[in-house]
Amino acid sequence: MLVYCSKIYYLCTMNLDLERIGNIPVTTSAVASLFPELKAGNQKVRNLEADGSLIRLKRGLYVVSPKISRVSLSTELIANHLYAPSYVSMHTALRYYGMIPEAVYVTQSMTVKHSRNFDTPIGRFEYQMISRDAFPVGITYINKQEYAFLMATPEKALCDLIANSQKVNLRYLKDVENYLEEDIRMEIEDFKNMDVSIFEQYALVGKKANSISTLIKYLRK
Image 1 (cartoon, one colour):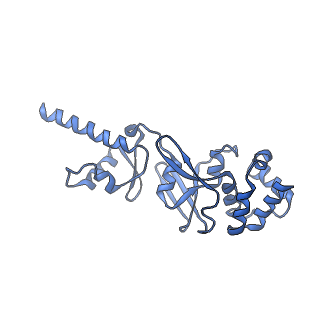
Image 2 (cartoon, helix red, strand yellow):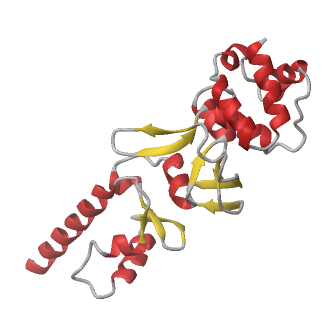
Image 3 (cartoon, rainbow, N blue to C red):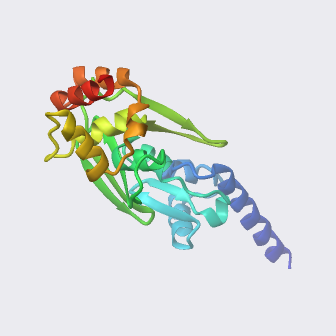
């Protein structure tokens, strides 16, 4: 009976430690450090993955299952940790801000590293390479109660989307209207309320400067 009670106490303590992590992705060593009394800490991590307490994102990186943490997972937060440095952008960010109507089933991000994709139990994460000069332009922290993640502003997300869409070439003002209204279904009024200074900064250091310059002309007309 004493052994049984000790086991229950240990399991409750273990779940409490994992619950404190919340939805922030953690490394194998960070999880293993919660159990200093165990010599085989890494094996404990594998056991926790096997019983569904931990979700493996990639080798050496995990997130606590919501059934243990009691916190909903954030694909944006996961994206920041899965391949860093990076920030959420393009369709994913525009949908987050409610600026495009279609649901987005892939979490898109920009990174200064090589482009790369990850398929995880949480979903697919795609990363496109951006220059180090263009990376810091127009990004912001989205603060939640217990965590924060890095995301493009609507302006930067639109720039990144245009820069990484091969067939998009905005030469004329009418091209801007067609692209916004027909291709990505963004309201023109929402676009007109954007910060032109971010487009100006991006045009100096980012790709497709001519297309971004056409956006600027449209905003200023």
